[in-house]
Length: 232
Image (cartoon, rainbow, N blue to C red; front, side, top):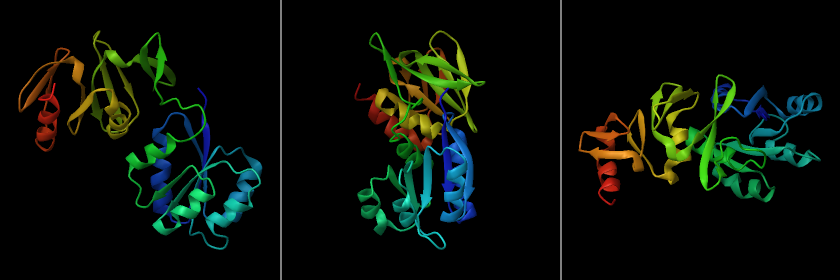
């Protein structure tokens, strides 16, 4: 599996910790360290390959965008800041994306999908059928999209149930898979469940039947789920 080395340049420990945790959720991203200022980052980039730079704008000493300008061959860079007024300047410098703090995982996930490198989270097509690769016990396992019945959240892991009765467990937050799958006829029915609409055989206000499973409909999702299903 191809992995991309990620360096965080951030002087706020809590903000850096959030990014580090997000990076560790993504199998194809490899966290190589954190620098609290641009000079440390420059030294780190002399000693190791950095594919993705998470760069805070307001750094002590040399500011983040000035540091970026100083790089003759900068890696793909995702700018992080609490100030939206720097967005235009960042995009003029051709950064990959611009994230406003506090950064929710959903927004982080959208940003990393813009990285112009092999993206193991992207869908693939074989003979007209789409599939994803998921990291299962350090092995990339192919899962056909049309065979996924539902996804269940198990804290920092999810279990993906297939129509043939098999299932796999992989390390992802459910919110990231919701973003990946929402355009492929999947609906969030509960804080712990995503369900594939084509596999739904019956439903009510309180539960859904799909692929031999009975899935509860969460109170906060009820109206949205009914609106989707009643249009079928």
